[in-house]
Image (cartoon, rainbow, N blue to C red; front, top):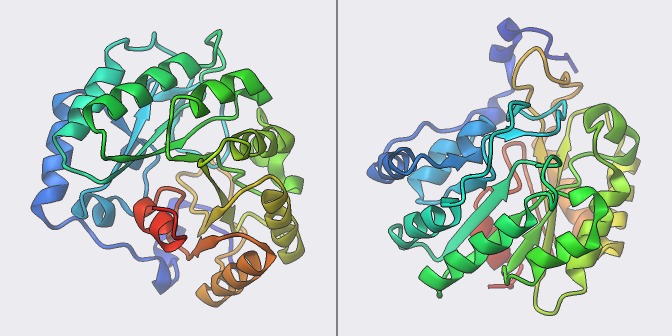
Length: 294
């Protein structure tokens, strides 16, 4: 299929890639709270196409450790470089904001901070504990970096008590170096494996499609995820944020997403959320519920 090569071509997206615009009061309430406390959300920083649908439903994904990443993955719209000191008040602000939203489920993610001695794992643990303290009945999903495969740092977050530990594999092994030059396929798998060893911790990952991967490579990645203890997988269409980012090689048809869902679940994944607009945090509470885990 045609590659996206310029902004003018963005309008020629298939009809199944249209996302609804925000339309109700919940969206504007969330936006107001995020602005009031000067917090970051991956919904905005990563230009997620589902921001209207998710915020209308009262769900969002907070992004901690700043709004600029130490890595420069070729698919991601989050800023890179210009790394500022971590805000020590951020864990309390995140917890306070969530306590005002009356949610049953929250997702927290972060940028990579390889510049910090502990990669930000201490800040992560503090945030989880603060949220748990102010929102004891809320389920917490954490979408974490790989911490360059450091098991002690990964365990620090797992031991803080999230309900779901997510880390995204992002793409198949053959495309890792091109798409995620500062990451390693094995680091990601080891992150998931470390989390899978924790009792009662749900393990989750995500893959983007349309970057030039072959079907057998997607299947092999799903097998690797199962072997690493992953239980929930989300599959979505990669969309190019700007001409500076990796090109879209193919628009994957919804029928193929359904095929991947069936294959993944036959391989042992408890639940596969698959569709063109699916993202790792898309309706995360419903993903966990569909898997019978909350």
